[in-house]
Length: 442
Image 1 (cartoon, rainbow, N blue to C red):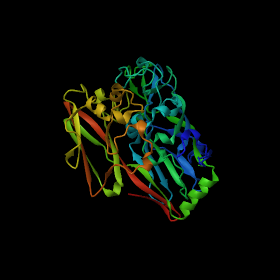
Image 2: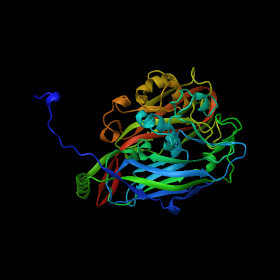
Image 3: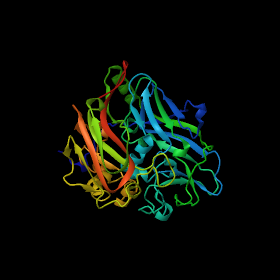
Image 4: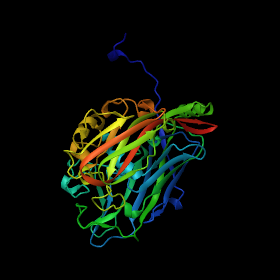
């Protein structure tokens, strides 16, 4: 046996060597004008002859609102990807690798617990999700109150100058599409063109104005219907593998039908809107067709989702559930068996139960958790984020989906509320790429 201190034997190791391959979207040389009708697209055709790493790929675009609003500041949410209603990544032949509807809500729930702190703190405002780098008095929550953590909490808003048009440039790594195939830090080869499409929302659903630079509820008003959100210089920088040994090996596996990998997949669940009720029971049914296993379920509660002015379309706990705590409680079940022995008080008990999952994430405190609340039902090993050695695509974990899994989330609060529940199960599927086509199968 040789001690590590005197072990000098060289060991050959291969690491990826990436060169960015520039891709211009199909839409008018990267220029897209989003209006109050929504539905505009940004579409990238990814070449099928390249070995590439999705998570090291990023998208860049410059945006500017078409005109200023006199006497007001233009506001846009900064703690999520508010512009996109749907994202879809599909091959020209085969099943989608990614398809998420109501993606703006998903990003609101997934980014805070899903982005590692080391990644989060190295991005400035160009990353689309970053630290506020200010006092809490200058990073107001959607209800106009101060946020919870100076300097470090996610920035809630992008704002223009007084009487100026909102503008900026974003660089969004695909690793920010949490728990999807886009965030996989592995080289892949599809052997055919695949298409990544972003569908935009109406401008009135992600832009508004206010008369205070820091407080979004002072003089809040909808953005004018005739203003557009103009995108220019949209570009994808695809991280194409340059190491010949790695590319030859992966293409050989593809040709022999052996290029297989486990991918995380966000399952579509329709939102549930409940009017003026003091207790809700949300039921989700998952079947073998939805994946090999279910790893976790993200559950969010939002108030008025079609009006973006401050205090609405948010998952800030006291805005959605006034007077949280006390009799505001929740619990969940799987196939009618409770996951918690006792009801959890919202904003306190649930945070303590989930805290290990938040280690090393952008959920920096209980207050920050309440500022953007998300209940996570974790079916994988209960390992803190800081201690996970293997990425999700290397861990076959979670609950089996067969013949049927019924998950129910039950919440009760003090006063009757009208809210919308958004539920996003994360399952594991298998991707099989070969000359015969691309399959995404349970």
